[in-house]
Structure formats: C-alpha cells, structure tokens
Amino acid sequence: MISGAFDAAWAATWPAAEYVLAGGLVVGRGAGGGGRVSCARRLEDAAPAGQGRIGADVEAAEARHRAWGQPALFAVEREDAALAHALRRRGYAESEPTLILSSPVAPLCEPEIPSVTAMALWPPLAIQRELWLACDVGPERQAIMERVQTPKAAIIGRMDDRAAGACFVAVQGEVALMHALAVLPQWRGRGLGAWMVRRAARFARAQGAAQLGLSVTEDNAVARAFYARLGFSEIGGYSYWRRE
Image (cartoon, rainbow, N blue to C red; front, side, top):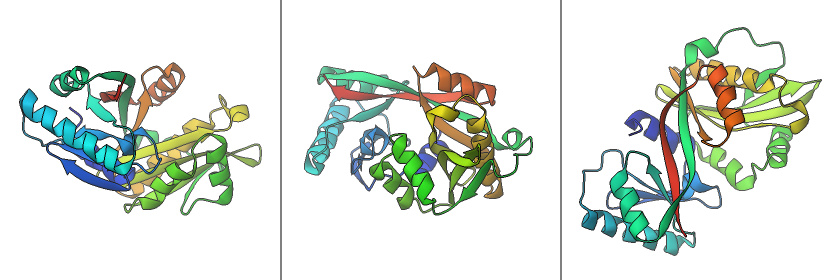
C-alpha cells in the first residue's frame, strides 16, 4: 500500500473541496476537479474488514456521491483485492491504471538551472493560468491549487524568450508532490520539462522535503520514460473503478 506519508501529502497538496468518511473509506467532493479529488478511497489506517463491511462502506460512499451530484468513483490501490472484488460484484470496472513515482530531492537539484529557464512563484502569473488552460488544466483544477494550505509554488518554464510551460508543487512534511506539469506542444522534447522538475525539487528542498513525487498513467510511455531518465522510480499504484 502507498505509505501514510504519501497519502497525507496527496490530500494536502491536491485537496478535494470537502471530505466525508464512509466507514473505512473517505469520499472527496471534487467540484469538477477530476478523479483524484472526486473519488472514494480506503483510509490508510482502516482496519481490515470482511466483504459485508466493505459492501456497506461502498454503499455509503455511493450515497455520498449521489448527494453531491457526482458519479460514483473509487480509487483502489492495486494491492487491495478485497475492495476491488466488492466493486466488481457491484458492476464496477477498472480503468486508468496509474503509477505513483518518487525521487529523492537532492539529486534533482543538480545541475544549476540556466537563468530565467524555470522559476518558482506564487500566486501564478496570468500567463501561467492561460498556459494551463491551453493544456486542459481548467479553472476547476486550478481552484484545487488555491485550496492548498501548505507551502506551494507555481513553476513557470521559459524558452525562446516566452512562457512555454507551467507546473504546481506543494510540500507536506518531508514529501513534496508535483501536479499539472504542462509544456506547450511546440516546445516539447527540448528539455524544458526537466528544468521545471529541477526547479520544483529546489523549492521542495528549501521547504525541508526529502522526496518529490507525482502520478502518471501507466499507458503514458513517453512520460514514464521522461521521469525514469530523471531518476524517478515506482513506489505504488492505483486504478479508478467506475460502473460499466
């Protein structure tokens, strides 16, 4: 299972608009911000439960989703066979297998970042917000960044004398997580993304973090190769479960 430290960091650095407990599950009200903030997931410290208890928790989570007017969605870690079995029996199907990657911060802080190539600031500049919009990081996902109460920064990446990339990083304890990394298509493949990751790592180190993590879908081979070259390794994974 994903460690408690990483789970807590995810909730702190990419928070739902609201959380409600449903037995051993916690349900997020996403407010249109995507699956990670709109799902129900098992609490890291939840006691083991039989299928009857798990089924009751699933029903309670479904009721909360309905009350919020959002589709029922569950995030299930790949080791959690009991919850996956309960959902399959209720007509859910697995989708979007996602990997959690992590790297020590220290090696990412080298070498020096070229001047004005990647900078950390808060709040984001208008051009960063426009760039995110162009890369399908809309107002609802940008609102998630605003909700974060821990140390955070918007990274701006520049190439050819213009803003060409943006990402978000926030820190909870010794764990920093990076979200919404986006580079405009015409500047991809030229190394800008790597400099932005290194700037995020430097911000994380300044806030006392030792690890930098992120998520990437399993079928995104290009992104997985990119992060592997930077030294990220897999520490866990989950899938979303929806009704067929």
